[in-house]
Amino acid sequence: MSITDTKPQLEGAKTVTVNIFRYDPATTDKPHYDSWQVPIIGSMTVLDLLFHLLEHEDGSLAFRYACREAICGSCALYVNGSYRLACKTQLKDLKAPEINISPLPHLKVIKDLVVDMDPFWEKYERIKPYLITRDEPPEKEFLQDPAARLKMDDMVDCILCGACYSGCPTVWTDPDYLGPAALVKMNRFTVDTRDQGNKERTKLFDNEHGVWRCHTIFNCVEACPKDINQTYSIQHLKRRAVARRFGGK
Amino acid sequence: MSVRDQGQPAWLVGPGGAIAWLLQRLSGFILVLLLGTHLLLLHYGGDQQLVFASVTIRLKTVLFIIIDTGLLASGLYHGLNGLRNVVLDWDISRRAAAVLTTVLWIVGIFMTIYGATALYSFWAGRGVFGG
Ligand code: HEM
Ligand code: SF4
Ligand code: FES
Image 1 (tube, rainbow over the protein chains, first blue to last red):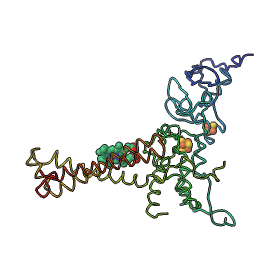
Image 2: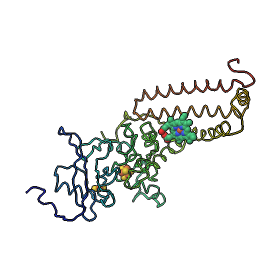
Image 3: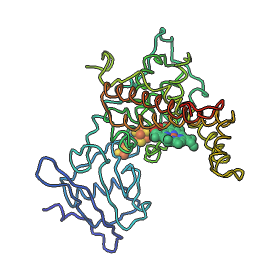
Image 4: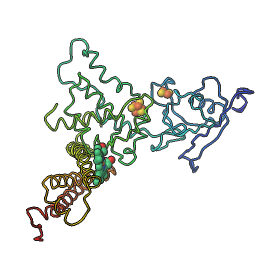
């Protein structure tokens, strides 16, 4: 039985044309788009659509996913000209007769919709994305009052999907630029009242591949599926770097 | 190698441009004020014609000299540091960045002095070039 034999019979179901970026560096094929007609079933998401294609059209289609509920950050894609999480985007919300799906732009394609995220993770590691403490740890937990917690409210929502990183023009030209997500995480620890790593963190962002490469283009803010304001975080780090030059903490 | 034990990594080009960033903002702010004043006074204000006599009078007025010197210095700093920002976006080497910064400072200082000689030519009734 071929995989198409199990195709759901959806007589009369509304369909949509889907164009998907295909590329397999292991073959000599050039990158191209494959098109299919796909039935829109209920509140189908872009991820459901990809599964539909995988099951019924082409078992070799490569894409990433894990949680299916907008929390793991694996499924970020470029859909109809916008950065979106495949699992969080319903087809009907796209309100378009055709759907174009590409991998995150400006990153190396491994296969089809799967890109190489290594540079993203490498920079994330650079900024020491963990709590740094010097004092003896407290008996129980580290206490933090609600007002202090509120200051990092938007930054802790980051799911490390890489959309902002892929959309940042400085990342495109400077391969060493830390990028928005890593800098948001940096700011998250900088404003964290429990963290004592300010001194070693500062030299990691106050350098020519750090915050000074940000020109407040706001592409990251536009790309973020979690509505995080990366530019605000980066500007906050810039002000902090200047304050430190004048003896601030 | 874990991140915890890494030494000074090659990408860490710094210390960074905190002061340059601050000065870019400050010169931008000064430019808003001075460009505004400059345009109002010279292009929209009064019925002054651009003739030798009026220019001579202007360049003998303390306020004009202050405004124009400020405009010259802040415009040059802002434009040249802006250029430096643009070039640094191309991940050039630490050495090239240092050479660029030095060259731009030399160009900036030279052009400030050169511009100032023109501004101060009628100051105290005589030109800097003796004219
Ligand atoms: C109304 C006056 C002006 C204001 C308020 C202003 C403001 C700014 C600011 C805030 C930046 C920093 C952008 C960043 O964060 O990277 C900037 C960059 C820059 N400015 Fe201006 N500017 C003014 C006039 C000028 C003029 C007259 C020139 C040309 C001489 C100029 C050339 C540049 C350049 C080349 C950059 C670098 C571009 C970049 O870093 O993205 N600006 N300006
Ligand atoms: S800041 Fe937003 S776009 Fe960037 S990695 Fe985090 S969730 Fe994704
Ligand atoms: S599959 Fe986890 S965020 Fe979409």
